[in-house]
Image 1 (spheres, rainbow, N blue to C red):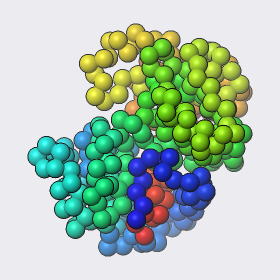
Image 2: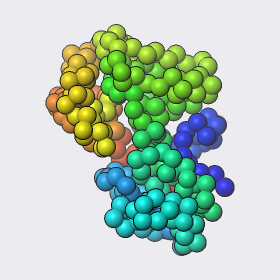
Image 3: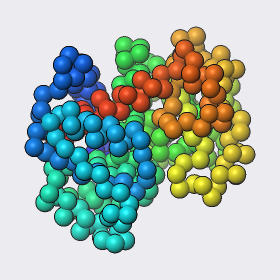
Image 4: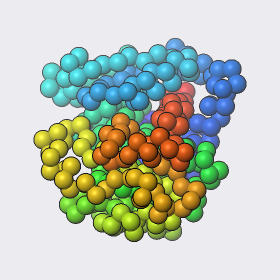
Amino acid sequence: MKHFLDLADWSSTDLRHMIRLAQQIRLEWESGGNRPVLGGKTLGMIFQKPSLRTRVSFDVGMKHLGGYAIYMGPDEIGLGKRESIADVSRVLSGMVQGIMARVFDHAHVTELAKWADVPVINGLSDDSHPCQAMADILTIIDHFGHSDGLHLTYIGDGNNVARSLLLICAHFGVHYTIASPKGYELPQITVDTAKGINPNIEINLLHDTNEAAEGADILYTDTWVSMGQEAEATQRVDAFSDYQINQQLLQRAARHAIVMHDLPAYRGKEITDEVADGPQSVLFKQAANRLHAQKAILVTLMS
C-alpha cells in the first residue's frame, strides 16, 4: 500500500506517470465526464486548518470519479487530543477507503499513515504541500509543453510550499532559485534531498530578489504569514517587505515568464494586483489544476 505524504517518497518515473494520468483524466472530464473508477469508495477528509482549494478539489474529485468524500473538521475529531491519532486512523480504516489530512504538524500525517490500512494523502502539513506541487508542475507543463530545462524562481519564505516546489522541480528537471530574507532560508536537508533526486538541476539559494528573478521562466510566491504564524505577523511583514512580485521584478524575468501563487494571495503584500491579474499570471489555472492533479493521486492510490 502506498501513501502520498512527501514527494521524496516517490520516484520521478511514478510522478511523471501521475501527471500524464492527470492530463488524461482532465481530458476525459472535459469530453463528457470521468468513468466511475472510484465507485462505492469513500475518502475521509481530516481538516485541522480551514481550506478552499483542498476541500473543494478533493470533494469534487471524488464525486467526479464516482465516489464520496466526508469532511471532518477540527471540532469533530480533535486529532491527537480527544482521541489518539492511532485510534482515529484505525477507526477510519474500517469505514473509508482513503484518508486525506490537512494538518499543522507533519508528524500527525505520518502517524496516521503508520496505523492506517488504507492510503493516506498529505493535503498539507507544516513541512510539505505535495498536492499543491503536483498541480504546479501540471500547470507548468500545460503552459510550456515540457518541464526539463526550465528555470523557476521562488520569492519568499523557505516554507512547506517552497520545499515541495524544490522537490517537484528535481523530479521534473526544473532548475530552482529561491530568494529569501536571512533567517527564512530553505532548510539544507531539503536541498540535499533534491540533489539526491536529481543532481543535474541547478539550485540557487539567494537573498537578492533582482538577481534571483533574472531570466526566470517562472516566478512563484506565497503568503508571508501562514496559518499558525499569526503571532509573528508584524515581524514577518517587516522581514519580507522587499520580497514582492511586482511589475518591476517581473520585467527582470524572461519575456515569456509566467507568475504563480498557491493562494490565498494577500494582494499588495507578496504580489501586486497588477501582476496577479495580469497577462502573465496563471494563478487561477493553477488553482483549477488542483482538481485534476488530485484526481490522478486518488486514482493511483485508491482504484
